[in-house]
Length: 240
Image 1 (cartoon, helix red, strand yellow):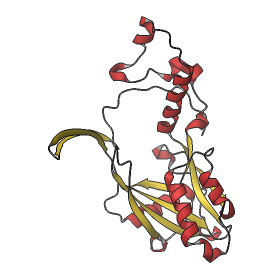
Image 2 (cartoon, rainbow, N blue to C red):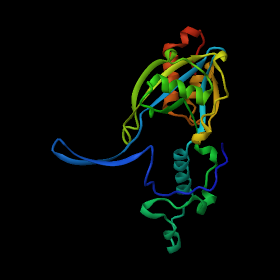
Image 3 (cartoon, rainbow, N blue to C red):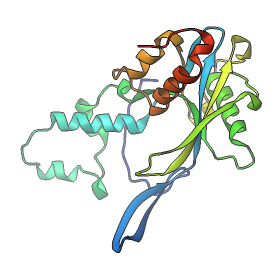
Image 4 (cartoon, helix red, strand yellow):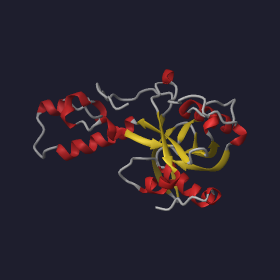
């Protein structure tokens, strides 16, 4: 998972997942504009294994996170000296950064782009309900076969409101070792490389607030939801 090389950054002119737009509008008599991305809605699933009393998360490399860390590393190591013509020419067109291969000494370790997340997926199958899509993701990513009827809807919310405005619907699924039918890991045909991770219930809140462990807001929110709504059922403290 953490062997990343041959990085190259190019302008994105076509994508199956993102479409950039600029909207112009008047607000209280003032003309404004805003750039945004149109993308798919998504589902996420908080999985709790009742056999081992642990949460089941996924861990994967996220290029967008890695590139943010790369930009930070470049800023820290950059010198205030003037750029040479050669250095300026190395900048890619339209303001995009140059190839990372040209700045290999500045590359952070690949682990800088690895995050802990809830099992999740895009809502891109119009013939399936949200529950069915969530069920498929749990099976593909984490290896648990859970009936869609057993998924409890927690809530839905807007994610990335400044850029995409897409909606994510979060579910809760209780599983046991008997539901485990494979090792998970995602769909290799789709380029997924996912590691299944288990977080013990009694360590959950410490894990959620540990800033040294990169994670999504969905993990933090869902652990808090479980603490407030489900932990009394298992009579195990989830306090930090």
